[in-house]
Image 1 (tube, protein in one colour):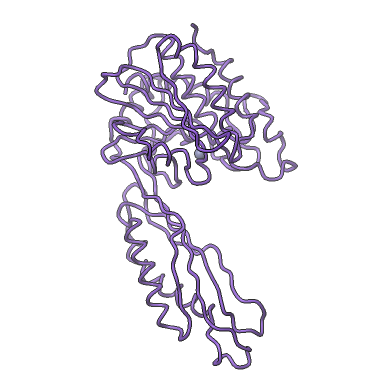
Image 2: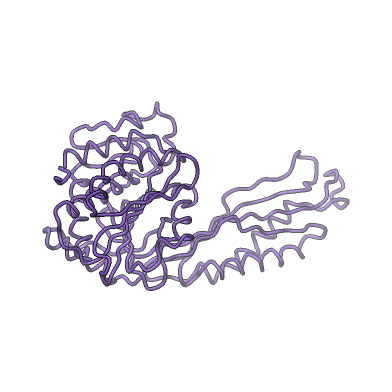
Length: 385
Ligand SMILES: [Zn+2]
Protein backbone atom coordinates (compact mmCIF):
# COMPACT_ATOMS: atom_id res chain seq x y z
CA UNK A 1 0.00 0.00 0.00
CA UNK A 2 1.23 3.43 -0.95
CA UNK A 3 0.83 6.82 0.67
CA UNK A 4 -1.82 9.15 -0.73
CA UNK A 5 -0.01 11.77 -2.83
CA UNK A 6 -0.86 15.46 -2.62
CA UNK A 7 -2.54 15.30 -6.05
CA UNK A 8 -4.68 12.36 -4.92
CA UNK A 9 -5.50 14.20 -1.68
CA UNK A 10 -6.64 17.27 -3.64
CA UNK A 11 -8.84 15.07 -5.85
CA UNK A 12 -10.28 13.41 -2.73
CA UNK A 13 -11.05 16.81 -1.21
CA UNK A 14 -12.75 17.93 -4.43
CA UNK A 15 -14.83 14.74 -4.55
CA UNK A 16 -15.97 15.30 -0.95
CA UNK A 17 -16.72 19.00 -1.50
CA UNK A 18 -19.03 18.10 -4.39
CA UNK A 19 -21.29 16.25 -1.93
CA UNK A 20 -23.86 18.72 -0.67
CA UNK A 21 -23.80 17.89 3.04
CA UNK A 22 -26.04 20.77 4.12
CA UNK A 23 -27.56 19.16 7.20
CA UNK A 24 -27.83 15.76 5.46
CA UNK A 25 -26.02 13.05 3.50
CA UNK A 26 -22.86 13.00 5.63
CA UNK A 27 -22.90 9.21 5.08
CA UNK A 28 -21.84 9.81 1.47
CA UNK A 29 -18.65 11.42 2.78
CA UNK A 30 -18.23 8.65 5.37
CA UNK A 31 -18.63 6.08 2.55
CA UNK A 32 -15.76 7.59 0.57
CA UNK A 33 -13.44 7.81 3.57
CA UNK A 34 -14.38 4.31 4.73
CA UNK A 35 -13.78 2.78 1.28
CA UNK A 36 -10.35 4.42 1.15
CA UNK A 37 -9.47 3.16 4.67
CA UNK A 38 -10.86 -0.37 4.21
CA UNK A 39 -7.62 -1.98 2.91
CA UNK A 40 -5.82 -0.72 6.02
CA UNK A 41 -8.57 -2.16 8.20
CA UNK A 42 -8.25 -5.48 6.31
CA UNK A 43 -4.50 -5.38 6.96
CA UNK A 44 -5.14 -4.96 10.69
CA UNK A 45 -3.77 -1.41 10.82
CA UNK A 46 -6.99 0.24 12.00
CA UNK A 47 -10.51 -0.45 13.18
CA UNK A 48 -13.49 1.39 11.80
CA UNK A 49 -16.99 1.91 13.09
CA UNK A 50 -20.08 3.95 12.26
CA UNK A 51 -22.44 5.57 14.70
CA UNK A 52 -25.66 6.43 12.83
CA UNK A 53 -27.38 9.65 13.89
CA UNK A 54 -30.26 9.53 11.36
CA UNK A 55 -30.85 7.92 7.94
CA UNK A 56 -28.00 9.04 5.65
CA UNK A 57 -26.17 10.61 8.56
CA UNK A 58 -23.46 8.35 10.00
CA UNK A 59 -20.58 9.46 12.20
CA UNK A 60 -17.39 7.61 11.23
CA UNK A 61 -14.85 6.53 13.83
CA UNK A 62 -11.39 5.16 12.97
CA UNK A 63 -9.04 3.95 15.69
CA UNK A 64 -5.39 3.12 15.01
CA UNK A 65 -2.00 2.94 16.66
CA UNK A 66 -0.66 1.19 19.72
CA UNK A 67 -3.45 -0.06 22.00
CA UNK A 68 -1.08 0.09 24.99
CA UNK A 69 0.08 3.66 24.32
CA UNK A 70 0.09 5.80 27.46
CA UNK A 71 -1.78 8.57 25.63
CA UNK A 72 -4.70 8.74 23.22
CA UNK A 73 -5.25 11.58 20.78
CA UNK A 74 -8.74 12.45 19.49
CA UNK A 75 -8.83 13.97 15.99
CA UNK A 76 -12.09 15.68 15.08
CA UNK A 77 -13.62 17.07 11.89
CA UNK A 78 -17.22 17.63 10.84
CA UNK A 79 -18.60 16.47 7.49
CA UNK A 80 -21.56 18.87 7.23
CA UNK A 81 -21.49 22.40 5.82
CA UNK A 82 -23.76 25.44 6.01
CA UNK A 83 -26.06 26.35 3.10
CA UNK A 84 -24.54 28.16 0.12
CA UNK A 85 -27.09 30.98 0.02
CA UNK A 86 -27.78 32.45 -3.42
CA UNK A 87 -25.61 30.52 -5.94
CA UNK A 88 -25.88 33.48 -8.35
CA UNK A 89 -23.73 35.51 -5.96
CA UNK A 90 -20.89 33.00 -6.22
CA UNK A 91 -18.19 33.41 -8.89
CA UNK A 92 -17.65 29.63 -8.74
CA UNK A 93 -20.35 26.97 -8.37
CA UNK A 94 -20.72 26.46 -4.60
CA UNK A 95 -20.52 22.67 -4.92
CA UNK A 96 -18.25 22.58 -7.99
CA UNK A 97 -14.90 22.45 -6.13
CA UNK A 98 -13.19 24.44 -8.89
CA UNK A 99 -9.50 25.21 -8.65
CA UNK A 100 -8.27 28.53 -10.02
CA UNK A 101 -4.63 29.59 -9.70
CA UNK A 102 -3.90 27.43 -6.67
CA UNK A 103 -7.14 28.25 -4.83
CA UNK A 104 -9.97 25.76 -4.37
CA UNK A 105 -13.43 27.32 -4.21
CA UNK A 106 -16.66 25.96 -2.74
CA UNK A 107 -18.78 25.52 0.35
CA UNK A 108 -16.78 23.65 2.96
CA UNK A 109 -13.38 24.53 1.46
CA UNK A 110 -12.33 26.23 4.67
CA UNK A 111 -15.06 25.06 7.08
CA UNK A 112 -13.99 22.37 7.15
CA UNK A 113 -13.63 19.71 4.51
CA UNK A 114 -9.99 20.69 3.94
CA UNK A 115 -9.19 20.11 7.62
CA UNK A 116 -11.19 16.87 7.67
CA UNK A 117 -9.53 15.44 4.55
CA UNK A 118 -6.04 16.64 5.55
CA UNK A 119 -6.39 14.85 8.90
CA UNK A 120 -7.73 11.71 7.21
CA UNK A 121 -4.90 11.62 4.66
CA UNK A 122 -2.31 12.26 7.38
CA UNK A 123 -3.69 9.34 9.40
CA UNK A 124 -3.76 7.09 6.33
CA UNK A 125 -0.20 7.98 5.33
CA UNK A 126 1.14 7.44 8.84
CA UNK A 127 -0.37 3.96 8.95
CA UNK A 128 0.83 3.00 5.49
CA UNK A 129 4.37 4.17 6.18
CA UNK A 130 4.56 2.29 9.48
CA UNK A 131 5.68 5.40 11.40
CA UNK A 132 6.00 4.86 15.15
CA UNK A 133 3.10 6.53 16.94
CA UNK A 134 3.38 7.78 20.52
CA UNK A 135 -0.40 7.76 21.02
CA UNK A 136 -3.36 5.70 19.99
CA UNK A 137 -5.28 7.80 17.46
CA UNK A 138 -9.08 8.18 17.48
CA UNK A 139 -10.38 9.90 14.34
CA UNK A 140 -13.95 11.23 14.45
CA UNK A 141 -15.79 12.47 11.34
CA UNK A 142 -18.99 13.97 12.71
CA UNK A 143 -22.46 14.95 11.48
CA UNK A 144 -24.54 18.03 12.18
CA UNK A 145 -21.85 20.21 13.76
CA UNK A 146 -23.21 23.37 12.16
CA UNK A 147 -26.66 22.96 13.70
CA UNK A 148 -26.14 21.71 17.23
CA UNK A 149 -23.06 19.45 17.19
CA UNK A 150 -25.35 16.43 16.83
CA UNK A 151 -22.57 13.98 16.04
CA UNK A 152 -20.15 15.09 18.76
CA UNK A 153 -23.04 15.14 21.25
CA UNK A 154 -23.85 11.55 20.32
CA UNK A 155 -20.20 10.42 20.43
CA UNK A 156 -19.73 11.96 23.87
CA UNK A 157 -22.96 10.41 25.19
CA UNK A 158 -21.77 7.01 23.96
CA UNK A 159 -18.36 7.48 25.61
CA UNK A 160 -16.18 7.62 22.48
CA UNK A 161 -14.17 10.46 24.03
CA UNK A 162 -13.54 8.57 27.28
CA UNK A 163 -9.86 8.22 28.12
CA UNK A 164 -8.57 10.64 25.47
CA UNK A 165 -5.52 12.60 26.64
CA UNK A 166 -5.81 15.23 23.94
CA UNK A 167 -8.19 16.47 21.27
CA UNK A 168 -7.21 18.25 18.08
CA UNK A 169 -10.14 19.87 16.28
CA UNK A 170 -9.18 20.44 12.65
CA UNK A 171 -11.38 23.54 12.20
CA UNK A 172 -9.82 26.45 10.31
CA UNK A 173 -7.74 28.39 12.82
CA UNK A 174 -5.57 30.28 10.38
CA UNK A 175 -1.96 30.47 11.51
CA UNK A 176 -2.89 30.30 15.18
CA UNK A 177 -3.69 27.67 17.80
CA UNK A 178 -6.82 27.83 19.92
CA UNK A 179 -6.68 25.81 23.15
CA UNK A 180 -10.00 27.15 24.44
CA UNK A 181 -13.36 28.37 23.15
CA UNK A 182 -16.22 30.42 24.57
CA UNK A 183 -19.49 28.72 25.50
CA UNK A 184 -22.99 29.67 24.39
CA UNK A 185 -26.52 30.13 25.72
CA UNK A 186 -29.57 30.77 23.50
CA UNK A 187 -32.70 31.74 25.37
CA UNK A 188 -36.25 33.07 24.94
CA UNK A 189 -38.22 35.36 27.26
CA UNK A 190 -41.99 35.39 26.73
CA UNK A 191 -44.19 38.12 28.21
CA UNK A 192 -47.94 37.60 28.63
CA UNK A 193 -50.28 40.50 29.49
CA UNK A 194 -53.81 41.55 28.53
CA UNK A 195 -55.07 43.18 25.34
CA UNK A 196 -57.04 46.43 25.46
CA UNK A 197 -57.85 49.37 23.20
CA UNK A 198 -54.87 51.69 23.17
CA UNK A 199 -57.13 54.61 24.11
CA UNK A 200 -57.65 52.90 27.50
CA UNK A 201 -54.31 51.18 28.22
CA UNK A 202 -55.19 50.95 31.92
CA UNK A 203 -57.71 48.20 30.99
CA UNK A 204 -54.88 46.01 29.66
CA UNK A 205 -51.36 44.90 30.57
CA UNK A 206 -48.68 45.72 28.00
CA UNK A 207 -46.51 42.68 27.22
CA UNK A 208 -43.95 44.81 25.36
CA UNK A 209 -43.53 46.99 28.47
CA UNK A 210 -42.73 43.72 30.28
CA UNK A 211 -39.91 43.00 27.80
CA UNK A 212 -38.54 46.53 28.24
CA UNK A 213 -38.49 45.95 31.99
CA UNK A 214 -36.69 42.66 31.37
CA UNK A 215 -34.12 44.34 29.13
CA UNK A 216 -33.30 46.91 31.84
CA UNK A 217 -33.13 44.26 34.57
CA UNK A 218 -30.99 41.91 32.46
CA UNK A 219 -28.47 44.67 31.72
CA UNK A 220 -27.98 45.19 35.48
CA UNK A 221 -28.00 41.49 36.40
CA UNK A 222 -25.40 40.51 33.75
CA UNK A 223 -23.14 43.52 34.21
CA UNK A 224 -20.68 41.90 36.63
CA UNK A 225 -20.46 38.86 34.33
CA UNK A 226 -19.88 40.72 31.06
CA UNK A 227 -17.25 42.94 32.71
CA UNK A 228 -14.99 39.98 33.66
CA UNK A 229 -12.01 39.65 31.33
CA UNK A 230 -10.73 36.12 30.73
CA UNK A 231 -7.03 36.19 29.81
CA UNK A 232 -7.57 34.02 26.70
CA UNK A 233 -11.19 34.63 25.75
CA UNK A 234 -11.79 38.27 26.70
CA UNK A 235 -15.26 39.41 27.76
CA UNK A 236 -18.36 37.28 27.88
CA UNK A 237 -21.11 38.93 25.84
CA UNK A 238 -24.90 39.18 26.04
CA UNK A 239 -26.99 40.36 23.08
CA UNK A 240 -30.74 40.44 22.52
CA UNK A 241 -31.01 39.44 18.88
CA UNK A 242 -34.71 38.80 18.08
CA UNK A 243 -37.92 40.50 19.22
CA UNK A 244 -41.57 39.93 18.43
CA UNK A 245 -44.79 41.38 19.79
CA UNK A 246 -48.11 43.11 19.24
CA UNK A 247 -50.62 42.91 16.38
CA UNK A 248 -51.77 46.40 15.65
CA UNK A 249 -50.72 49.93 16.53
CA UNK A 250 -53.91 50.74 18.47
CA UNK A 251 -54.06 47.54 20.56
CA UNK A 252 -52.18 47.05 23.81
CA UNK A 253 -50.14 43.90 23.09
CA UNK A 254 -51.10 40.75 24.93
CA UNK A 255 -47.96 38.76 24.13
CA UNK A 256 -44.38 39.54 23.18
CA UNK A 257 -41.16 37.59 23.16
CA UNK A 258 -37.48 38.11 22.64
CA UNK A 259 -34.47 35.89 22.16
CA UNK A 260 -30.96 36.43 23.41
CA UNK A 261 -27.51 34.97 22.76
CA UNK A 262 -24.73 34.82 25.32
CA UNK A 263 -21.09 33.84 24.79
CA UNK A 264 -19.66 32.60 28.05
CA UNK A 265 -16.17 32.15 29.53
CA UNK A 266 -14.88 30.13 32.50
CA UNK A 267 -15.00 33.33 34.60
CA UNK A 268 -18.58 34.13 33.55
CA UNK A 269 -19.97 30.67 32.98
CA UNK A 270 -23.31 29.25 31.83
CA UNK A 271 -24.62 28.61 35.35
CA UNK A 272 -23.87 32.19 36.45
CA UNK A 273 -25.55 33.67 33.36
CA UNK A 274 -28.58 31.41 33.72
CA UNK A 275 -28.97 32.57 37.34
CA UNK A 276 -28.66 36.22 36.22
CA UNK A 277 -31.34 35.76 33.55
CA UNK A 278 -33.68 34.11 36.07
CA UNK A 279 -33.15 37.01 38.48
CA UNK A 280 -33.86 39.52 35.70
CA UNK A 281 -37.11 37.76 34.79
CA UNK A 282 -38.22 37.71 38.43
CA UNK A 283 -37.35 41.38 38.85
CA UNK A 284 -39.11 42.43 35.63
CA UNK A 285 -42.21 40.37 36.42
CA UNK A 286 -42.89 42.67 39.38
CA UNK A 287 -42.39 45.89 37.39
CA UNK A 288 -45.39 45.85 35.03
CA UNK A 289 -48.68 44.95 36.78
CA UNK A 290 -50.57 42.19 35.00
CA UNK A 291 -47.64 41.05 32.85
CA UNK A 292 -45.94 37.75 33.58
CA UNK A 293 -42.61 36.70 32.12
CA UNK A 294 -41.14 33.27 31.55
CA UNK A 295 -37.61 32.23 30.61
CA UNK A 296 -36.71 29.24 28.48
CA UNK A 297 -33.08 28.19 27.95
CA UNK A 298 -33.11 26.86 24.38
CA UNK A 299 -29.56 25.59 24.19
CA UNK A 300 -26.46 25.76 26.32
CA UNK A 301 -22.88 24.63 25.81
CA UNK A 302 -20.06 25.43 28.22
CA UNK A 303 -16.81 27.20 27.51
CA UNK A 304 -14.10 24.54 27.31
CA UNK A 305 -10.35 24.54 27.09
CA UNK A 306 -7.03 23.67 28.55
CA UNK A 307 -3.93 25.70 29.49
CA UNK A 308 -2.27 27.60 26.65
CA UNK A 309 0.95 25.62 27.14
CA UNK A 310 -0.71 22.18 27.11
CA UNK A 311 1.26 19.28 25.61
CA UNK A 312 -0.72 19.26 22.36
CA UNK A 313 -0.04 22.97 21.79
CA UNK A 314 3.63 22.32 22.56
CA UNK A 315 3.69 19.45 20.05
CA UNK A 316 2.18 21.67 17.35
CA UNK A 317 4.74 24.43 18.03
CA UNK A 318 7.59 21.90 17.90
CA UNK A 319 6.36 20.58 14.53
CA UNK A 320 6.02 24.14 13.19
CA UNK A 321 9.58 24.93 14.24
CA UNK A 322 10.87 21.75 12.60
CA UNK A 323 9.06 22.76 9.40
CA UNK A 324 10.66 26.20 9.46
CA UNK A 325 7.42 27.96 10.36
CA UNK A 326 7.15 30.72 12.96
CA UNK A 327 5.69 29.87 16.36
CA UNK A 328 1.91 30.29 16.11
CA UNK A 329 0.08 32.74 18.35
CA UNK A 330 -2.00 30.91 20.98
CA UNK A 331 -5.38 32.62 21.34
CA UNK A 332 -8.91 31.91 22.54
CA UNK A 333 -11.46 30.76 19.96
CA UNK A 334 -14.71 32.74 19.79
CA UNK A 335 -16.86 30.13 18.02
CA UNK A 336 -18.35 26.84 19.14
CA UNK A 337 -16.88 23.57 17.88
CA UNK A 338 -17.21 19.86 18.63
CA UNK A 339 -14.77 20.29 21.53
CA UNK A 340 -17.67 21.78 23.54
CA UNK A 341 -19.02 18.22 23.70
CA UNK A 342 -15.91 16.06 23.43
CA UNK A 343 -13.50 17.79 25.80
CA UNK A 344 -13.40 16.63 29.40
CA UNK A 345 -11.42 18.13 32.30
CA UNK A 346 -7.69 17.54 32.05
CA UNK A 347 -7.73 16.82 28.30
CA UNK A 348 -5.27 18.80 26.16
CA UNK A 349 -7.05 20.82 23.49
CA UNK A 350 -6.05 22.56 20.29
CA UNK A 351 -8.23 23.87 17.51
CA UNK A 352 -5.75 23.94 14.66
CA UNK A 353 -6.49 23.57 10.99
CA UNK A 354 -6.06 24.93 7.47
CA UNK A 355 -8.25 27.73 6.20
CA UNK A 356 -8.84 31.44 6.00
CA UNK A 357 -11.61 33.82 7.06
CA UNK A 358 -14.04 32.79 4.28
CA UNK A 359 -16.05 30.34 6.46
CA UNK A 360 -19.82 30.49 5.80
CA UNK A 361 -19.27 33.15 3.10
CA UNK A 362 -19.88 33.43 -0.63
CA UNK A 363 -16.86 32.17 -2.61
CA UNK A 364 -15.51 30.25 0.37
CA UNK A 365 -12.05 29.04 -0.55
CA UNK A 366 -8.81 27.45 0.57
CA UNK A 367 -5.29 27.83 -0.79
CA UNK A 368 -4.18 24.42 -2.05
CA UNK A 369 -0.79 25.07 -0.41
CA UNK A 370 -2.49 25.47 3.00
CA UNK A 371 -4.24 22.15 2.52
CA UNK A 372 -1.14 20.19 1.53
CA UNK A 373 0.91 21.87 4.27
CA UNK A 374 -1.75 20.74 6.77
CA UNK A 375 -1.42 17.10 5.66
CA UNK A 376 2.30 17.23 6.35
CA UNK A 377 1.85 19.05 9.68
CA UNK A 378 -0.84 16.64 10.88
CA UNK A 379 1.37 13.64 10.04
CA UNK A 380 4.03 14.96 12.39
CA UNK A 381 1.61 16.14 15.09
CA UNK A 382 -0.32 12.85 15.15
CA UNK A 383 2.90 10.81 15.30
CA UNK A 384 4.59 12.92 17.95
CA UNK A 385 1.82 13.70 20.43
ZN1 LIG B 1 -16.69 24.22 11.28
